Length: 472
Length: 168
Image 1 (tube, rainbow over the protein chains, first blue to last red):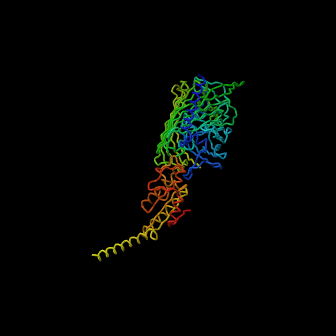
Image 2: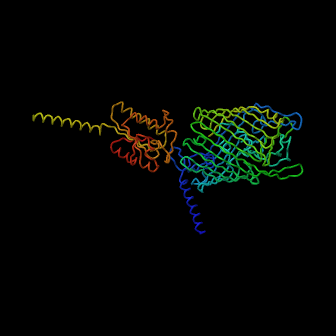
């Protein structure tokens, strides 16, 4: 009896496997998604219309340069007296990555990349990218010594059907804004939620626990770094990822990814003390035309990240370990067809809530920026954006608008901050991603339960940016 | 009456002779036959081929000479005779519909040529290539005709007196 039941179960599994193989087998995935675009060389290419298996042995050299000019209209607040005397309390008035001024030109990104096939059958792919620009990778809040000068080095093994394996340093499964190729979007700055809560600034060595005035009035426990030791995570990590995209119906495809990473971003750390799990699932309907950023498609996705974070707190005499968790998750959708693009995402953060850069230098003319976090699991933030873009002249001239919000520390009435940004702009494309973008950011921030903090954030004002991108 | 019948028979015989001679002139010496093989993927060569095809049609129409123009699409060149690409070994590239000297792409220029030349232009599609690249008949452009093998069609047309014009 028991044996019969086992056989029946085996038979059902076999049938299900066969059914899956029939449904999924022998299909060619046409939908474009960032997991595949960044992690795998194409199965087929058709440079002159004739589809042939990809077998190019020479690496593909490509890259891009982005130069921008920004002008911020906010006021700078540096109190002359009190506990914050000489400290710059308005990092939001300063320009990334060094937070040293309110206007100027910047070679924001200058990347050179190589990718290709490392075998004869296109089963082993590689991806390598350098970064020479002045941004969080090489000069995070003015700490040039954290520079890595490269952001990606990965190998993809495609031997197992429907389970490609990527190892090395690369973009983690996550939000669309972080996962997409950064040089294709006409928005010069990330949304507040993405910039503050997803784009991790790693902290390792911190001072003692802070509350009240030292924590912006918050009642929750904060910690501030004592040194900046790592570059910005750049939405990346070092680890291993299983992923693939399969066609499930005629025009629908399903993408999945699971990654286990060290949780160290792009810093040169072999330790997995901050180990992090990443997951991603997307269902995409292809409308059949375009490629890459211009793939006409509609996509729905969910993602989640959960990692440990270990801080070393030094009280002047002894060092103690402080353990925390960093959770991030969200869902969203994208739509692009006939020159109309609509995107929306909603994201949540729990634990390791970034509450801003803090100037620790009491000299009014000098800044030493450190990062402050509300580390406990009880600390939460949420936010998102809606984005609408329309190509008035197809693939040439585009106008766009995006509205994004971030509610930070929603569990702490004194520490809560609300950021609202409307970005309006236009973009002229010379060829593909080679273009000029104009952005105007209408910014506002509130501290609903903290009158003193409101006086600080009232200094926030609008920002104008223009950026030229050349891609090759 | 007999004389009248004989006269009518002679006239009929003479008329039949004239028709026969005229038909013989059309099928051999009078009709200029040309065949263009399109077996390459390079779109610039295709546009150059279309330039020469247009020149041929204009010349013979202007000089009132009878002509028969044959375009044989096979191998990588078959993509230029397709309107649907799903599930095939070809990819619908933008140059089919956009670009070229007139901005209409290759297919727009082919349509213009079909209108200009009318029945004098025949476009043959290679059946062997269709089979190998999984192309269905309904995925072909209208006004095209499937032939068993493109290369055999070229040989047959050449044996029938057609000049083979190879664009390089």
